[in-house]
Image 1 (cartoon, one colour):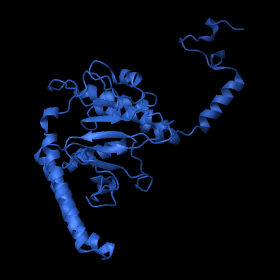
Image 2 (cartoon, rainbow, N blue to C red):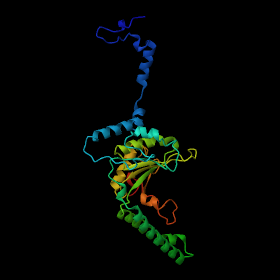
Image 3 (cartoon, rainbow, N blue to C red):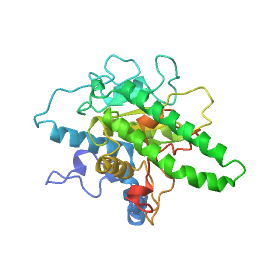
Length: 307
Protein backbone atom coordinates (compact mmCIF):
# COMPACT_ATOMS: atom_id res chain seq x y z
CA UNK A 1 0.00 0.00 0.00
CA UNK A 2 1.39 3.42 -0.88
CA UNK A 3 2.25 5.77 1.97
CA UNK A 4 0.15 8.85 2.63
CA UNK A 5 3.05 11.05 1.58
CA UNK A 6 3.27 9.34 -1.81
CA UNK A 7 -0.37 10.27 -2.52
CA UNK A 8 0.52 14.00 -2.50
CA UNK A 9 2.08 15.51 -5.62
CA UNK A 10 4.74 18.17 -5.61
CA UNK A 11 2.15 20.94 -5.77
CA UNK A 12 0.68 19.84 -2.44
CA UNK A 13 -2.53 18.39 -3.96
CA UNK A 14 -3.83 14.87 -3.49
CA UNK A 15 -3.12 12.82 -6.59
CA UNK A 16 -6.01 11.53 -8.65
CA UNK A 17 -4.45 8.08 -8.27
CA UNK A 18 -4.77 8.25 -4.46
CA UNK A 19 -7.09 5.85 -2.65
CA UNK A 20 -8.52 8.97 -0.99
CA UNK A 21 -11.03 9.04 -3.88
CA UNK A 22 -11.86 5.33 -3.52
CA UNK A 23 -10.99 2.57 -5.94
CA UNK A 24 -11.90 2.57 -9.63
CA UNK A 25 -15.35 1.10 -9.01
CA UNK A 26 -16.16 3.72 -6.36
CA UNK A 27 -15.09 6.55 -8.63
CA UNK A 28 -17.13 5.18 -11.55
CA UNK A 29 -20.21 4.81 -9.35
CA UNK A 30 -19.93 8.33 -7.92
CA UNK A 31 -19.39 9.88 -11.33
CA UNK A 32 -22.49 8.10 -12.65
CA UNK A 33 -24.59 9.31 -9.69
CA UNK A 34 -23.37 12.86 -10.22
CA UNK A 35 -24.36 12.76 -13.90
CA UNK A 36 -27.83 11.36 -13.10
CA UNK A 37 -28.59 13.75 -10.19
CA UNK A 38 -31.45 16.13 -10.92
CA UNK A 39 -31.52 19.11 -8.53
CA UNK A 40 -34.90 20.35 -9.79
CA UNK A 41 -36.97 18.64 -7.10
CA UNK A 42 -34.62 19.79 -4.35
CA UNK A 43 -34.77 23.44 -5.37
CA UNK A 44 -38.54 23.26 -5.87
CA UNK A 45 -38.93 22.41 -2.17
CA UNK A 46 -35.89 24.29 -0.87
CA UNK A 47 -37.74 27.56 0.02
CA UNK A 48 -40.19 25.64 2.21
CA UNK A 49 -37.64 23.71 4.30
CA UNK A 50 -37.85 24.83 7.94
CA UNK A 51 -34.06 25.36 8.36
CA UNK A 52 -34.00 27.53 5.22
CA UNK A 53 -36.98 29.62 6.36
CA UNK A 54 -35.49 30.00 9.84
CA UNK A 55 -32.11 31.04 8.48
CA UNK A 56 -33.69 33.60 6.15
CA UNK A 57 -35.77 35.01 9.00
CA UNK A 58 -32.76 35.32 11.28
CA UNK A 59 -30.75 37.01 8.55
CA UNK A 60 -33.53 39.54 7.98
CA UNK A 61 -33.79 40.24 11.70
CA UNK A 62 -30.02 40.70 12.05
CA UNK A 63 -29.97 43.05 9.07
CA UNK A 64 -32.54 45.33 10.69
CA UNK A 65 -31.33 45.02 14.28
CA UNK A 66 -28.87 47.88 13.89
CA UNK A 67 -31.61 50.39 13.05
CA UNK A 68 -32.92 52.58 15.92
CA UNK A 69 -36.06 51.17 17.53
CA UNK A 70 -38.10 51.51 20.69
CA UNK A 71 -37.63 49.00 23.54
CA UNK A 72 -38.92 45.50 22.97
CA UNK A 73 -42.31 44.68 24.45
CA UNK A 74 -43.76 41.23 25.15
CA UNK A 75 -47.47 40.92 25.80
CA UNK A 76 -46.87 37.46 27.33
CA UNK A 77 -43.84 38.27 29.49
CA UNK A 78 -44.09 36.41 32.79
CA UNK A 79 -46.73 33.97 31.48
CA UNK A 80 -45.54 30.37 31.45
CA UNK A 81 -47.51 29.61 28.29
CA UNK A 82 -45.82 32.38 26.29
CA UNK A 83 -42.40 32.95 24.82
CA UNK A 84 -40.18 35.14 27.03
CA UNK A 85 -37.85 37.85 25.78
CA UNK A 86 -34.83 36.15 27.32
CA UNK A 87 -35.35 32.87 25.47
CA UNK A 88 -34.66 32.13 21.84
CA UNK A 89 -37.40 30.86 19.56
CA UNK A 90 -35.66 27.49 19.52
CA UNK A 91 -35.68 27.32 23.33
CA UNK A 92 -39.34 28.37 23.39
CA UNK A 93 -40.32 25.64 20.91
CA UNK A 94 -38.48 23.02 22.96
CA UNK A 95 -40.11 24.20 26.19
CA UNK A 96 -43.65 24.27 24.77
CA UNK A 97 -43.95 21.84 21.84
CA UNK A 98 -47.56 22.09 20.63
CA UNK A 99 -47.84 18.42 19.75
CA UNK A 100 -47.27 17.20 23.33
CA UNK A 101 -47.97 20.18 25.61
CA UNK A 102 -51.28 19.43 27.33
CA UNK A 103 -53.97 22.09 27.53
CA UNK A 104 -54.63 23.32 31.06
CA UNK A 105 -55.97 26.32 32.99
CA UNK A 106 -52.47 27.78 33.04
CA UNK A 107 -51.86 26.94 29.38
CA UNK A 108 -55.06 27.26 27.31
CA UNK A 109 -52.94 28.33 24.33
CA UNK A 110 -49.25 28.62 23.48
CA UNK A 111 -48.43 32.25 22.65
CA UNK A 112 -45.68 34.21 20.96
CA UNK A 113 -45.58 37.98 20.41
CA UNK A 114 -43.87 40.22 17.92
CA UNK A 115 -41.69 42.18 20.38
CA UNK A 116 -41.49 45.09 17.92
CA UNK A 117 -45.28 45.52 17.54
CA UNK A 118 -46.78 48.87 18.50
CA UNK A 119 -50.05 47.60 20.02
CA UNK A 120 -50.42 47.54 23.80
CA UNK A 121 -53.12 45.96 26.00
CA UNK A 122 -54.36 49.40 27.13
CA UNK A 123 -54.99 50.50 23.56
CA UNK A 124 -58.57 49.18 23.41
CA UNK A 125 -61.76 49.15 25.46
CA UNK A 126 -63.06 45.60 25.14
CA UNK A 127 -65.71 46.10 27.81
CA UNK A 128 -67.10 49.18 26.08
CA UNK A 129 -67.26 47.32 22.81
CA UNK A 130 -69.03 44.30 24.31
CA UNK A 131 -71.71 46.45 25.93
CA UNK A 132 -72.43 48.34 22.71
CA UNK A 133 -72.32 45.22 20.51
CA UNK A 134 -74.65 43.24 22.75
CA UNK A 135 -77.18 46.06 22.52
CA UNK A 136 -76.95 45.86 18.72
CA UNK A 137 -77.50 42.09 18.80
CA UNK A 138 -80.48 42.45 21.11
CA UNK A 139 -81.98 45.11 18.85
CA UNK A 140 -81.54 42.88 15.82
CA UNK A 141 -83.11 39.91 17.64
CA UNK A 142 -86.16 42.01 18.48
CA UNK A 143 -86.58 43.16 14.88
CA UNK A 144 -86.03 39.61 13.62
CA UNK A 145 -88.73 38.25 15.91
CA UNK A 146 -91.17 40.97 14.79
CA UNK A 147 -90.53 40.20 11.10
CA UNK A 148 -90.89 36.45 11.58
CA UNK A 149 -94.11 36.99 13.51
CA UNK A 150 -95.57 39.35 10.90
CA UNK A 151 -94.58 36.99 8.07
CA UNK A 152 -95.76 33.78 9.71
CA UNK A 153 -96.72 31.26 7.07
CA UNK A 154 -94.67 32.99 4.37
CA UNK A 155 -91.90 31.22 2.50
CA UNK A 156 -88.59 31.06 4.37
CA UNK A 157 -86.84 32.66 1.39
CA UNK A 158 -89.09 35.71 1.68
CA UNK A 159 -88.25 36.12 5.35
CA UNK A 160 -84.54 35.72 4.60
CA UNK A 161 -84.70 38.46 1.95
CA UNK A 162 -86.30 40.76 4.53
CA UNK A 163 -83.60 40.00 7.11
CA UNK A 164 -80.58 40.20 4.79
CA UNK A 165 -80.20 44.01 4.80
CA UNK A 166 -80.67 44.04 8.57
CA UNK A 167 -77.89 41.45 8.98
CA UNK A 168 -75.60 43.46 6.75
CA UNK A 169 -76.27 46.61 8.79
CA UNK A 170 -75.71 44.65 12.02
CA UNK A 171 -72.28 43.46 10.87
CA UNK A 172 -71.29 46.96 9.78
CA UNK A 173 -72.45 48.46 13.08
CA UNK A 174 -70.59 45.85 15.14
CA UNK A 175 -67.39 46.55 13.25
CA UNK A 176 -67.93 50.30 13.65
CA UNK A 177 -68.28 49.85 17.42
CA UNK A 178 -65.09 47.75 17.43
CA UNK A 179 -63.26 50.59 15.66
CA UNK A 180 -64.76 53.18 18.00
CA UNK A 181 -63.44 51.24 21.01
CA UNK A 182 -60.11 50.44 19.32
CA UNK A 183 -60.87 46.71 19.55
CA UNK A 184 -59.59 46.06 16.05
CA UNK A 185 -57.37 42.98 16.24
CA UNK A 186 -58.08 39.94 14.12
CA UNK A 187 -56.37 36.80 12.90
CA UNK A 188 -55.75 34.51 9.98
CA UNK A 189 -56.55 30.94 11.02
CA UNK A 190 -54.64 27.82 9.98
CA UNK A 191 -55.78 24.29 10.77
CA UNK A 192 -52.80 21.94 10.42
CA UNK A 193 -53.15 18.25 11.18
CA UNK A 194 -51.34 17.09 14.32
CA UNK A 195 -48.47 15.60 12.33
CA UNK A 196 -47.88 19.01 10.70
CA UNK A 197 -48.50 21.33 13.65
CA UNK A 198 -44.94 21.35 15.02
CA UNK A 199 -43.38 22.31 11.69
CA UNK A 200 -45.96 24.94 10.83
CA UNK A 201 -45.86 26.47 14.30
CA UNK A 202 -42.05 26.68 14.16
CA UNK A 203 -42.31 28.68 10.93
CA UNK A 204 -45.00 30.98 12.35
CA UNK A 205 -43.08 31.54 15.59
CA UNK A 206 -39.81 32.42 13.86
CA UNK A 207 -41.52 34.75 11.39
CA UNK A 208 -43.58 36.46 14.13
CA UNK A 209 -40.54 37.33 16.23
CA UNK A 210 -38.71 38.57 13.15
CA UNK A 211 -41.49 41.03 12.16
CA UNK A 212 -42.53 39.14 9.03
CA UNK A 213 -46.13 38.52 10.07
CA UNK A 214 -48.37 40.36 12.52
CA UNK A 215 -48.52 41.37 16.17
CA UNK A 216 -48.66 37.89 17.73
CA UNK A 217 -49.59 34.25 17.17
CA UNK A 218 -50.93 31.33 19.16
CA UNK A 219 -51.41 27.59 18.73
CA UNK A 220 -53.74 25.14 20.42
CA UNK A 221 -52.01 22.64 22.74
CA UNK A 222 -52.89 18.93 22.95
CA UNK A 223 -56.46 18.61 24.22
CA UNK A 224 -56.16 14.88 24.81
CA UNK A 225 -58.35 13.74 21.92
CA UNK A 226 -55.66 11.43 20.61
CA UNK A 227 -54.53 13.76 17.83
CA UNK A 228 -57.61 13.04 15.74
CA UNK A 229 -58.55 16.62 14.90
CA UNK A 230 -56.64 19.54 13.32
CA UNK A 231 -55.04 22.11 15.60
CA UNK A 232 -55.70 25.84 15.32
CA UNK A 233 -52.93 28.37 14.69
CA UNK A 234 -53.91 32.07 14.80
CA UNK A 235 -51.75 34.79 13.23
CA UNK A 236 -52.84 38.20 14.51
CA UNK A 237 -52.90 41.60 12.84
CA UNK A 238 -53.48 44.92 14.58
CA UNK A 239 -56.47 46.21 12.60
CA UNK A 240 -59.02 44.20 10.63
CA UNK A 241 -59.88 47.32 8.59
CA UNK A 242 -56.26 47.70 7.40
CA UNK A 243 -56.73 45.49 4.37
CA UNK A 244 -53.24 46.17 3.05
CA UNK A 245 -51.69 44.77 6.23
CA UNK A 246 -54.16 41.87 6.34
CA UNK A 247 -53.21 41.06 2.74
CA UNK A 248 -49.49 41.44 3.44
CA UNK A 249 -49.62 38.87 6.23
CA UNK A 250 -51.60 36.47 4.05
CA UNK A 251 -49.14 36.81 1.18
CA UNK A 252 -46.25 36.12 3.56
CA UNK A 253 -48.06 32.98 4.74
CA UNK A 254 -48.20 31.91 1.10
CA UNK A 255 -44.47 32.60 0.67
CA UNK A 256 -43.72 30.57 3.80
CA UNK A 257 -45.64 27.61 2.37
CA UNK A 258 -48.35 27.73 5.05
CA UNK A 259 -51.12 28.71 2.66
CA UNK A 260 -50.59 26.44 -0.31
CA UNK A 261 -51.53 27.11 -3.92
CA UNK A 262 -51.39 24.75 -6.86
CA UNK A 263 -49.63 25.37 -10.18
CA UNK A 264 -52.66 27.33 -11.40
CA UNK A 265 -52.42 29.66 -8.41
CA UNK A 266 -55.55 28.26 -6.74
CA UNK A 267 -55.51 27.50 -3.04
CA UNK A 268 -55.54 23.88 -1.94
CA UNK A 269 -57.71 24.83 1.05
CA UNK A 270 -59.46 28.10 1.91
CA UNK A 271 -58.04 30.22 4.74
CA UNK A 272 -60.19 32.58 6.78
CA UNK A 273 -59.68 35.79 8.77
CA UNK A 274 -61.81 36.50 11.84
CA UNK A 275 -62.09 39.73 13.78
CA UNK A 276 -61.54 39.33 17.53
CA UNK A 277 -64.73 41.32 17.98
CA UNK A 278 -66.64 38.41 16.40
CA UNK A 279 -64.79 35.88 18.56
CA UNK A 280 -65.63 37.70 21.80
CA UNK A 281 -69.30 37.85 20.80
CA UNK A 282 -69.35 34.10 20.16
CA UNK A 283 -70.12 34.48 16.49
CA UNK A 284 -69.39 30.94 15.37
CA UNK A 285 -70.83 29.01 12.47
CA UNK A 286 -74.60 28.70 12.79
CA UNK A 287 -74.95 31.55 15.29
CA UNK A 288 -78.48 32.68 16.13
CA UNK A 289 -78.12 36.00 14.30
CA UNK A 290 -77.12 34.40 11.00
CA UNK A 291 -73.87 36.39 10.76
CA UNK A 292 -70.82 35.06 8.97
CA UNK A 293 -68.21 34.12 11.58
CA UNK A 294 -65.29 35.19 9.38
CA UNK A 295 -64.64 38.66 8.01
CA UNK A 296 -62.46 37.71 5.04
CA UNK A 297 -61.55 34.64 3.02
CA UNK A 298 -58.14 34.28 1.42
CA UNK A 299 -59.74 34.26 -2.03
CA UNK A 300 -60.76 37.90 -1.40
CA UNK A 301 -57.08 38.83 -1.62
CA UNK A 302 -55.48 36.06 -3.68
CA UNK A 303 -58.04 35.97 -6.46
CA UNK A 304 -61.50 34.59 -7.04
CA UNK A 305 -63.27 37.17 -4.92
CA UNK A 306 -63.73 40.89 -4.62
CA UNK A 307 -60.90 42.91 -3.11
